[in-house]
Length: 278
Image 1 (cartoon, one colour):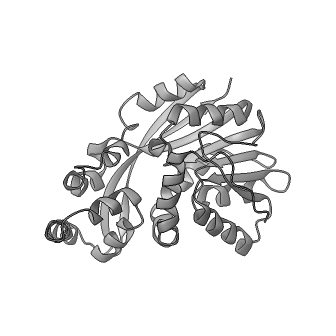
Image 2: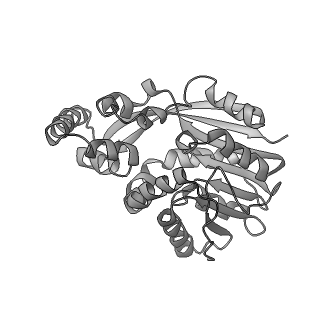
């Protein structure tokens, strides 16, 4: 696979890169499995066919991109972009191991998809990332630019904070001094995502709310997964040792009380949007 030069990375994206580079390997081992139902929901909504040209924005370690590439081959292709070089290295390695040759990964800032052509892609996807972008509307305008007329965008974001149990279980104790933890749910309220998409120029917008549950094998597995989330990880590290120990003890007791033969379930709500370029 061809290595692509660094292009158009903003200072904010560079900070994001450092955070995600640090947790990339752990993320690939833990979060890819946890996020699998949401990955396949994006794939389902994409309705990709042989010959489609797909751009996956904020591809991470490539879950959506790697799922779509076999569907669109042999004449279609997939490009995954992300700011984290380590995430891209892991995605590229997965493609090589699986023998997927109609895929490439590039380091790009979502707000400036430099050197990607206008009116090129039939499908653009962006899974569980838009809420973290500093320049959300600009990123969407770049996605719109790269889409061919009539092309479709599939976006997923976290839903309402009160419907996400990570928020209700843990984050209230961490939020002081870390407003980014609240922003994870900023697009989940009714009408917010639709308004943002419309403002960026998309039309024929449809949204769907889906509830589900993360399944952790144990309380320890929950804490391992938390280390793969840059925001909560940073906030936990910023606590005084006694405060961190108290929070871990309290949360662990709640989680242990939920344990079943299927593991420990932590509920979530996600919002999926399908939109078209006019």
